[in-house]
Structure formats: C-alpha cells, structure tokens
Length: 353
Image 1 (tube, rainbow, N blue to C red):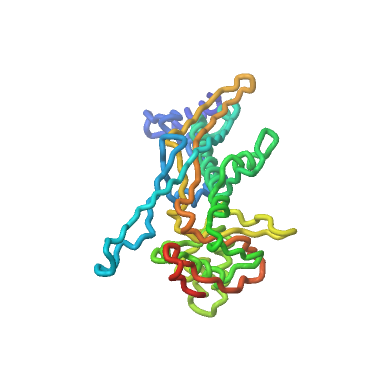
Image 2 (cartoon, rainbow, N blue to C red):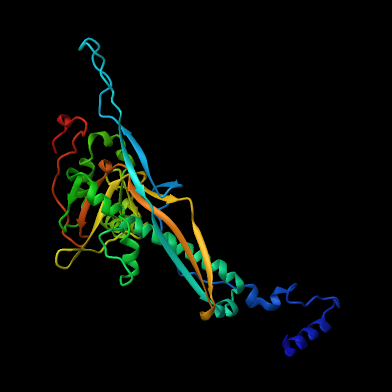
C-alpha cells in the first residue's frame, strides 16, 4: 500500500474517538469508493422484441415434422335429405423443420481482465453482452433469412448470418396464396390499404380477425400516429403527447425494431413489407442444447468465448397470412379496393367487394 495512504489512515485513527476504528479497505469500502461504486454503461441494446412474442417451439432433434390437422367438411346434413350420414374427414399435413447451426463469439485480452475498473466480473459482463448479441442475431435471421444470399469466407457477416436459412418474410413471399397478397407497387400506406388486408382474409379466419396484427417496423406505427395526430380532437392531442395511436380497423400495429424498411425497389426506391397475421402464427424452433465454450489463445494473450445454437423459422399456417408488399412510406397513399377473401372450403360463398 502507498506510504502516503498509510500515513493518512494513521492520522484518521489518531483523531478518532474510537481507538479501535477499523480502517481496512475491506471493512470500509468508502475508502476505495471508486472501486466499490464501479458501474458501467452498456451501449449494446436488446432489440429482440418479436422473438418473445411469437410461438416458440423447443425440440431435441435437429430435424423433424410437426403435424397439422384440419377439415373442410360440413359434419352435418338434413336427416331426411339422404341415405347416408355425412362424413367429417380429417386432413393431416406436416410442417418440416431443419435446424440450422449458428455461432456468435466475443473476446477480450488479459489487459482488459487486469486493468478494467469492473475487475474479474468483466467475464460475467461479456457473457451478458454476448447473449444480447445472440438474441438480436436470432431475430434478424428469423425475419430476414434468405438462402439465396451468397455465403462463404469472402462474404460479409450479415450474409453469413442470413444466407443459411429462410426467415418469415422469405417464407411469406413464397407461400402466401396469390389471392392474399397486396402489392402496393411503391405506394404509401393508407387506411384503405389496411382495410383491404382485412377484406382479403378467407372466411374461415375472419372469426379470429381480432387477433390479427399489422406486423412491421417503427416507421409503420409512426405513419399511423402522425396521420391520426392531424385530427383536431382529444384523440389527436393524445397522439401528439404519447406517440401512440392505438388500433386501425380494430387491429393493432406490432412494432418490430429490427424489421427491414429499406428494401430496394425499382431504380432508387426503398420499400418495406407488412404481414397481417396473428403473432402466434409465426414460430421459431430452437434446439434444447445451447453451448458456450471459452478458449485461451496464449500466443495473443487473449480469451475467446463462443456461443452455439440451432434454430429454424416457420409460418404455421400460410393460408392465415395477408402479405402487403412494396410499401413506400414516402410514397403517394395507396387507394383502391380488393375483393373480399373467399371461403377456402366453400368458394361459392365468397362475397363481392
């Protein structure tokens, strides 16, 4: 201990009314206040809002099937209308999952361990930050994954994250029935656009229409809040004060911070896609096994921690999705009308727009 500090402590002891005063650093942490009150500011933000809101399935095997049961049969008929009772046929289909392995890592050198103000607890801090980074990466991959992207040692980290598996947007673009896709063609959002999404739902799903949400990025909810604030009403004043506009046509906007809003369109335009579906219809499949491994690289005087996990992304029922694509938030408001969705079991019962 520095001789000046020892001298100072002896002087304090001599002036104290209690000659038994314990001035050790351990029992009097205020004597080492800077270390005792060490705090840090973590600038890494957890943005994985969507992952915790959708259906999460945990499995043991890397590949498997999830059965789906449905029926389009009417299970009843007039008792005197025929000779046989009507059949109620159960149809079974399967969703397949194939978990893809991902890896994240963080590293620190011995100097960081020896010289940082947080002490050896920096190991716990880096583990917490690694977990936050992994959650963000899991959500980005689940939303934007596209196996058509090139991957490899010469590609960017983002390509090597997204290019190994298809995410919800890619699956929605590939699997949503054509009659349930609205192409805004670079137009801006409007109340008519979102009403059309409600109209396009097949009849069998309309009973649960209140569970549907407009899933998109922050600009989507900002557009609605700004448009609603123009009303000279108490509601408009509330939006200006809170930034929250509530639901549109009875359905909420679900804001996803990591949702892509600058997708290339045409020559120089930027657009976004919007999903109209219950959050429970989106699923992420995880393997129970989660590995963390730390190695010491002696030649570099450095430690590296790796985290490994496996996941896949499913839309449980693509027929329950309305895809609104190519929406330009700076474009002219979308106008128009679409036909109401058909009754997928009984198309003759469809209603006109």
